[in-house]
Length: 467
Ligand code: FAD
Image 1 (cartoon, rainbow, N blue to C red):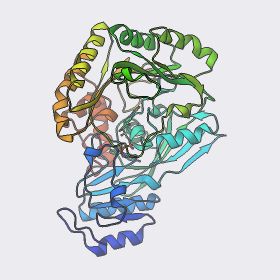
Image 2 (tube, protein in one colour; image 1 turned 180 degrees about the vertical axis):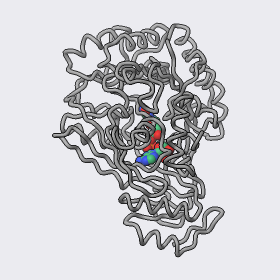
Image 3 (cartoon, rainbow, N blue to C red; image 1 turned 45 degrees about the vertical axis):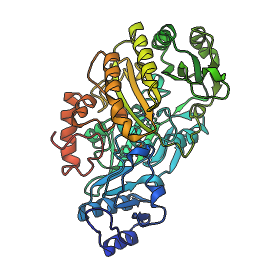
Image 4 (cartoon, rainbow, N blue to C red; image 1 turned 45 degrees about the horizontal axis):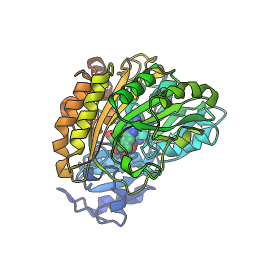
């Protein structure tokens, strides 16, 4: 076994020794299966690492870290592979690919889930759902629990139950020097604070322990109406005014070619709202009725179902080329709606842009009841998150999208600083200050200096040791 990729050729003996020492797999670009192992969610972010290690336990993880450090390979850690910043891969370096660390242990009596660092949100949601229990991640099942949890985790249950990190009880991780450490409220509380929103820069998380909550069913799904200034504004207003059992994502985007939509609607701008009421149908009905009354729905797929039904099936071969801009906002008015409609209409006329969407998430509720300094995710006070995204077919046209995405997002947020790390792509070194406000940044730098002084885990939205 050898890797001749990149600037240094790793001697066959050393790689062979690593392969012999661990229970998991060691792949090089010459190995069968390397291409599949190297596939990320976003097509344009592909890099060619010199080595991919797929550990089967914490010892394997420690061996992979030690190997990368000894050989001088840059390290990347991969959970679900959905990073928009290419953080879970590295050209010519070593990727620790956690796909085999995907165990899920649901302890019904204790009401907790112990989950391997390479599991997906969808798998955990399905396993917990078997027992009528839930933990909220994001809106997509294929996202890894690793990345979404370490960044915060905003999704279909956030207003009702808080962010994913607000339901995180403990973390087991392998540190840069190979120690296996458990962090929770009592053990290494500063590290536990940093792991809740501070990104993957502190070690390789091998187990997450989450609190589960009983929720036998939700009322949720998609509600779609034509997008006008009135409908867009009213959906956001209603979602903000709703009780916190309701979490809402209001997308303004061209109608996808869904089979139940008349052909003439395909491509027309619509409000595609994803609503989740965390409670019984009788309580949900009066909350959802005003949304249904905003305009005659083009599609009303709201229904009572187990929470795991909120995750749509995803085709394995969907690997988009996309870019986005994220921020928070204090409010939303008719001018915002008009700007969104005008901008999307203009940009979608470009042959380069396959899809463009403005995704407004209503925050508050349980998210904002946690103090801003209680976790490294500090943006607790914002009522709205806005994510503006474009999908293109040709990666060379991505850069051309950035100016209008940034301008639109800045206008919608009133130019206020602040960004959610999990939605930040390759946007330059200054963006870290939008993700972490000054006090959070300073505290993260101290924790980082203690646990990863050599910045081994730098492929993340992480603060450098000591700042
Ligand atoms: P990876 O690319 O594997 O990892 C991302 C980062 O986390 C990397 O720095 C990696 O090193 C680190 N990491 C991953 N696992 C571990 C681990 N076990 N130990 C240490 N470090 C680790 N976010 C939301 O909050 N809500 C949403 O609704 C939402 N929807 C999304 C939908 C799509 C289609 C996509 C692509 C992303 C979405 N996200 C959402 C963003 C998502 O949370 C981030 O992209 C997240 O980082 C992905 O995690 P991952 O493990 O899949 O990614």
